[in-house]
Image (cartoon, rainbow, N blue to C red):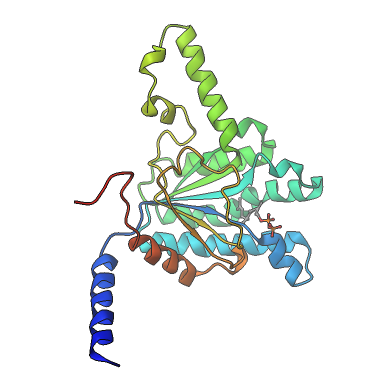
Length: 255
Ligand code: FPP
C-alpha cells in the first residue's frame, strides 16, 4: 500500500479508536419490525414471526444489559396495530403475558426494572395484569430499565399531554406564556426518562411510524435491512459503533 494511503488509514483508525472509547448510549429505542416478513420468507404463519421476535427480544435484552445500556425501550404494539386482523391483535396482546411469565424471574434477578409507556386502559385485562405485575415486582430495581411501548402512539400521546396542560391552564395552575419544553416533556408517558440517544429500526423500513416523535428530536437513527427475528449481538454492536462515531451537536457547533 502506498505510504500516503497507509498514513490515511492509520489516521482513520486512530480517530476511530479515539471515538470507540466513548461510552455506550444511555437510552436505546428499538422498533422491532419485520416479524411478518421473516415468517413469510419461511412460508410460516405471521404468528411464528412474532414468536421468533420474542426470542430476538430476549437476547437483545441480555446483550443490552451486558453492554451497559441504561434504558431499552421496545415498540411492542402501536395504537395503529389495532387495524390488523383480530386473531393477530389477540396474539400480539398475549405476548407480554407469555414473555413475562417465562422471563420476569430472570429479569428481576438481573436487577432489571420493567416500565411501560402507552395507553394502558385500552389493553385487555390479561395484558394489563401481566405488565402491572412486572412493573410492581421490579419497581425497586436499580439496573437496566426495560421499557415496553404498548398501545403506544406518539400523536395521541402529544394530544393527551396538550389536553392535560390546557386543562391546567383553564384551572389557573399553569400560565400559558410559561409553557415550555419541560412542561410538555413532563406530561408525556416518558416524563421519567431521558430522550433516546439511539433509535434502531430493523427490516429495511426507514420511517418512525408514530414512535416517540417528540422524544426523538435529537436522537441518532440507525437502520438495518435485517428483520427483527434475525437481529443479534453483532447488529446491536454495529449500531452502537455507528452511534459512537456520530457527531452530536444538538443544533450547536463544535469549538
Ligand atoms: C412488527 O413486525 C412487530 C410487531 C407489531 C410486534 C412486535 C412484537 C414482538 C417483537 C414480540 C415481543 C413482544 C413482547 C411484548 C414480548 P410486523 O409484524 O409489522 O412485520 P412485517 O412488517 O414484516 O409484517
